[in-house]
Length: 284
Ligand code: SAM
Image 1 (cartoon, protein in one colour):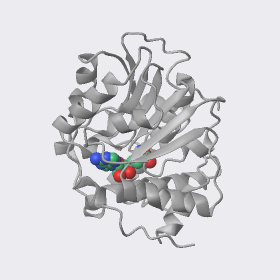
Image 2 (tube, rainbow, N blue to C red; image 1 turned 90 degrees about the vertical axis):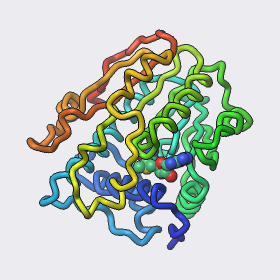
Image 3 (tube, rainbow, N blue to C red; image 1 turned 180 degrees about the vertical axis):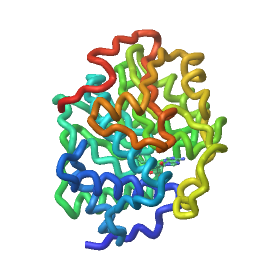
C-alpha cells in the first residue's frame, strides 16, 4: 500500500533515511537488529531500501553510525529498566513494537504530526501491535508546551524515566537544545537516564552533495560541549566511544571512516549513577 510521505518536512524526511538504513541492516545475514517495519516505511514512501554506496566514505560512515547507534540504544534502553520511556523525535523508530519490554512499560513517542501520521498509517496497514503501552504524541519539541502535553497524556514525572534523543540534537541550535534539555531535566526523577549522541562540530562536516539534503539541515545543537552542559545541569555522564561499541558488536570501524571521535552519552539524573552491566551487552 502506498502512503503519502509528501507532507513530511525536510527534517522529518531524515527519519525515512534512517528507516532505509535499518531496512538494509535488517536484511543482512547477521544483522545487529531486525526492524520488521523499516522496509515498509521505505516502500510506503516509494523509496528503495538504502544500498550502501562503497565509493562514498562519508555516506558509509553515517550508515555505520546509524546501525551501531540503533543497537546500542536498544541495549541501553532495556538495561535502564525504567517502566517509563520517552522517545524524543521518535521518527520511524519501532522500538515500541520490536523490543522485549518488561510488562507494565509505558512508552511515549514525540515527533512532528506528519511523520507520526505517516508512521501510524504504515504500522496499521501491517497490523503492528506494540509490546508496551505506547502513546504517540504529535507536536513540536520547540514548543514550550510539550512537557504539559506529555504529562496530560499520562507521563509521571515522579517515576524514573529512560529518555532517548536519537538523531535529534544536530538539527537544533544550541539555544533550542539547551531549552529542550532543561525541560527534560525538570521532568526527570532521580535515577532517570538520558541517551543521546556525543555532540559533533558540524563545521567539520565533510562536503558530500549526495547528503546535502541531510547535512544542510544540521545546526549543531550543543556541539562537542553537550556532555559538559549536561554535567553542569544535574546529570552524571558516561561517554562510550563508537570504536569501543563497534568492536564489542563485531563491526570494527573501517579505517579512515572519520568516526573515531564519535560516541554516545548516557546521563543519569541527580548523581544516582549505577551503570549496571557496562555500556554494551554482546547478547540480546
Ligand atoms: N529518532 C528517530 C530515529 O533515530 O529513527 C528519528 C531521527 S530523524 C534523523 C530526526 C527526527 O527529528 C525526525 O523524525 C524529525 O521529524 C524530528 N524532529 C526534528 N525537529 C523536531 C521538532 N522541533 N519537534 C519534534 N520532532 C522534531
